[in-house]
Image (tube, rainbow, N blue to C red; front, side):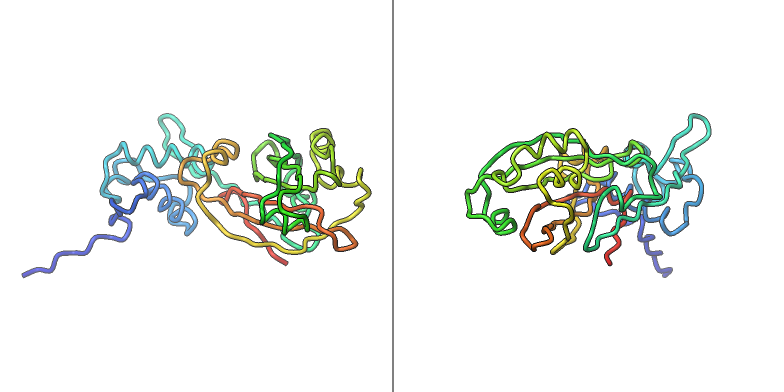
Length: 248
């Protein structure tokens, strides 16, 4: 009796793991692009449907998601092409600065203030900034762009008493470094950084122009002034398809 041929790994889609089939296919197409299997364009939809054991509608959903993320480009009557964009290398070091970190990789680098509020610090934020729990902190919600493309989305906290009005200074300059100089902070340093990855939230999907299920790289960090006192506590989410973090 002839043994039954095992299904190829890419065809063995997990239908009950809580991850939509189109998302699994999008991830596998992304992997095939990364390994060089798909060099310039994707195979026809029918071939992809057979490869993954799904219908063409599901394949179209995967392709549409990767188009939205800038990985693919569909041309009517010609096919679906791979966008060859090198990831931005974002350095994590003692003196991390968004604009400086992307110098030479993007011509236009800017920060946008999306929202701000003064609120009571929770335990984690208070500890990071050396404050008592419940002390007032200013929260900034920001979006950083490179050549018009969203790169990162951040939630940033400052001591509200020490840095009152920093939201206006950031809104005018688009730079945390420039805003801090107005408070006499001529330089600051990264005291600690935690790096992880997770699925993007609904808000981050919209602001970073990602499709549902996309992965973001997350850095949680504390910056201190020359005297070692905390000045900034932040969580930044980077689009994983666009940015790679380099730690030094």
